[in-house]
Picture 1 (tube, rainbow, N blue to C red):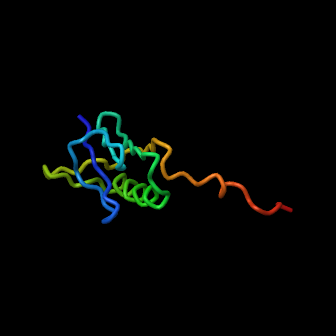
Picture 2: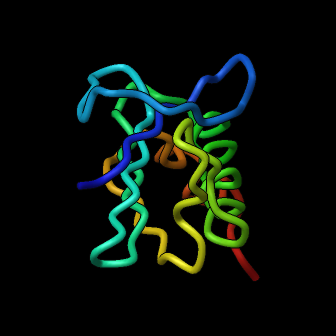
Length: 100
């Protein structure tokens, strides 16, 4: 059974949660059977929040996440980011100048 973590933007930390889906929060599912971390980013999130959550998730792949039961989960897992939230805006994808 996966462990679900929710990202708190005010503290820039993940915390353990019981919900497995949310429309307004960045969620991280730790799937021990496939050795994957699945981070879901909703479309309303900013790029700053997405990058902060991604940094925290990459830290979890290195050292794991200490859960309430005392176990450390997520170490040596592969991170996969799902969702379109926090992408670079289209106006910033193209240079306003011509490249020489």
